Amino acid sequence: MKILILYFVLINLVAWGLMGVDKHRAQKHEWRIPERTLFAAALLGGSLGAILGMYLWHHKTKHWYFVIGMPLILAVQIVVGIWVGSWF
Image (tube, rainbow, N blue to C red; front, side, top):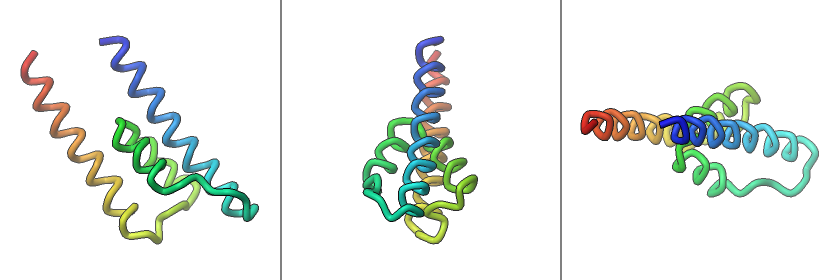
């Protein structure tokens, strides 16, 4: 259980950091992190971190697929977590 919690903390920190790095690179007109990478981090369990990063750095908040997609991923992860948790 401790390993699972550590995993979720780390993946959320990674997703949060990816949003911040991508925003910084966007402002400097540098190479960007692909959107599929941002979504992959969210799908791997970092959706909360990605959402917090989006709104902290005001990044990708004008893209409907991020504004709708990230909370949708989080909602599905919560439902799956509750469902799997009910087995134990």
